[in-house]
Image 1 (cartoon, each protein chain N blue to C red):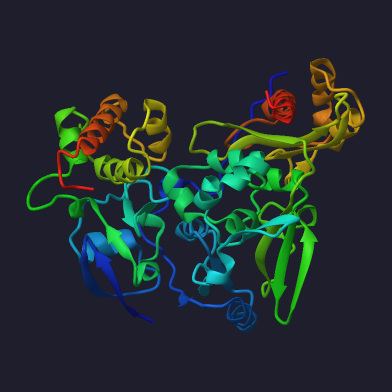
Image 2 (image 1 turned 180 degrees about the horizontal axis):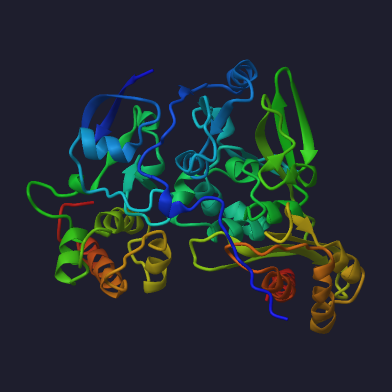
Length: 309
Length: 162
């Protein structure tokens, strides 16, 4: 039996005036992290943090959010950096995607993250949007999340009078939901350098080069001199309420000898780890099928990078 | 809660009073009469509102005017010098890259930054760089040709423009 799927977007963009911001708000520009956190604590949950603006201002135009206070985080200069700290690389939360894309250390050591950022929107948006914004907006399709998850990234969160570091796997709670409280800020992302020789890759399937992902995948793996897989991570976006690890695929491949055949077989198991839905971008069926293919392709590319071919 | 902001606009310092929810695009068009940057999609899909802020192409329809306080803003109106068009503008005219013209200021602002970063762009690199700009008339072929030609004339130093 053929079932007809009627997809109704929540907001019909053609019936929304996107010319102006139809909401009056009070605007703040704190200069330090401390000032920022104190301000958020004082203003309470009706404040919204403005970073690149490419998500928040669109949401305000659509009246999906109507903040009383808008706190611009971009003037907090101490959150704008890419820093090599020996064991790990630290990226400040308001670092622009374009700066990440242009960083040669990231391109070399965290290739999947480099590729993910390059795949995002156009150059104008990458000049505006921040990595912290991409994570805190918590879209299931966020392109920077899967690569950060495969590299076991940690997030430094700062609240009034305290700071903590959590694994990124604990950060997302659902679509548009994170563990952050109203008075907490994502301050930096820490990515441990993987042991060499590690290869990684990112693949995104989208309707156009500008669009959000129908499905995206990041993988990273390390093989020993006899081609046995000694470490592996596979993470997908846009196929579950949050970015997800494909543990079935990882478990199937760990300590196995790398071959196209076993990768092809293992990639099919990804359907056990994902729970895609049908929405305006794609169908659940398509997402399931194409996930198998891009997991396989990404693993083959990552392996070639380990071997330097 | 209005604010007085001061920024460099096409090379000259200007001052204006804005509300925090005013967008840079509307301030440029309505308060300064600079109608080069265009409103089209309003949500960051089309690139028609592209201007340079501190030299980098950004979307004026998703930028708060208060956010450019103290910064440098350049629109398409700021490219010509002493009545002479910028090499990109000339190349767009010469190659028939303009049909209705609505998207063109956005394309030229993006292309300007591309040619500063990469004076020898391949066709693929050009197409990659302009993917955030939508044109519904030309099919992009002549736009790409024009950018290539402008790259050549800028390299040849046939003009004092940078």
